[in-house]
Image (cartoon, rainbow, N blue to C red; front, side, top):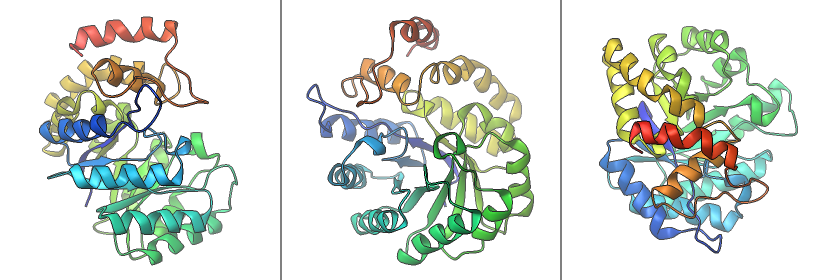
Length: 289
């Protein structure tokens, strides 16, 4: 359903810190022109945590309206099950092709709580649900055992794995049912995971270099690993520099330079520091970005 290259797009803001609809529409066009398979609004990179429900729904609606070829996998997660269900239903009503739902953050539920949370979401909508596991942000991990159990729930079609735990991801790959997709949530690990059988990436880097990420993932999916490794080597400095400070601080700086929004995240995130710019600017220059 969501194999290939998907971009976790930023939410561009105006100089007044409002959603920049023009820039957002141009960003969707830029992604499609470079061949991405899906765009993912309102994820961590899209600053969903710093947007009101009204803004969240508006951004999803704009992206659905603008997309002509790429699928729209709408971020609609929450640490509250009822809120996640509400956002998921709104995204479905707007025409999203699927829901990306982050594991409940801050509250640290048990594995049974995580299972029941996703079961409730999947039963509330008729579009596919992608589980988003990122323990570094949520404070809790979706174990391989729980993930494989959830993979049997009708409607749960994939996991975006950003735990960084290759052993855990390998367990999921080895035990998943037919048709269940495992998608990398970490640009730098994408090639390694695809060698193990993963199905693609939901990428931060493809905000600014979607064509490069499409080339990397396509080469890996076709078994052309030498070509994929070449692209990986070229992009490795970018992958590293995009996390010199908390995501999406660096990528918003890059996209602001490219004309998509004001280049700044909302508080409590801050603009890229001078030290961060000194690390990032040479990488951008080397890549022609």
